[in-house]
Length: 119
Image (cartoon, rainbow, N blue to C red; front, side):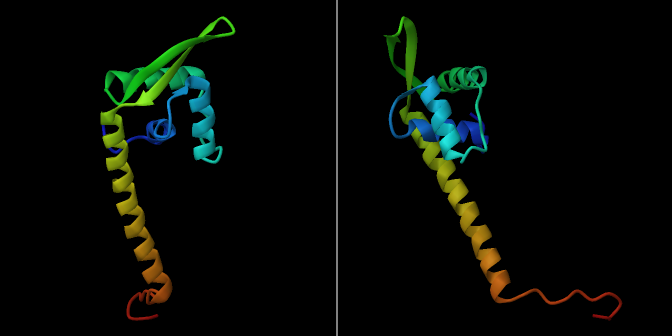
C-alpha cells in the first residue's frame, strides 16, 4: 500500500480501529470522522475494502444474514494496525511542524518586504 495514505483509506482504517464493522457502518463512521466532508458511496467503499483486503490491511471478521441479506464485517489486520499507526505518526509530525511555524509567525511577525530599498 502506498504511503502517504489517501484520506478515504486513512479514514476507513481509522473507522475499523475500534471494532469490526459492516459496510454501511463504515460509511457512517467515515462521514462522522470527517465531519461530513467525505461521503463514501457503497461501490467506492467495497472497492476500497477489496483493495485493502488484498493489501493485507483489512480482514473479513465474520458474515451474518440480516433480513435475508448477507452482511460482511471487516476488521483491521495487524498489518493494517501498524500502517495506521505509522501514518498517524507521520501526520502528527507534520501537524506539529506546521503548528510550530504558525505559532512562531504570530509571536514574531514577518518583516515587511522591501522593493528597491523601499519599505
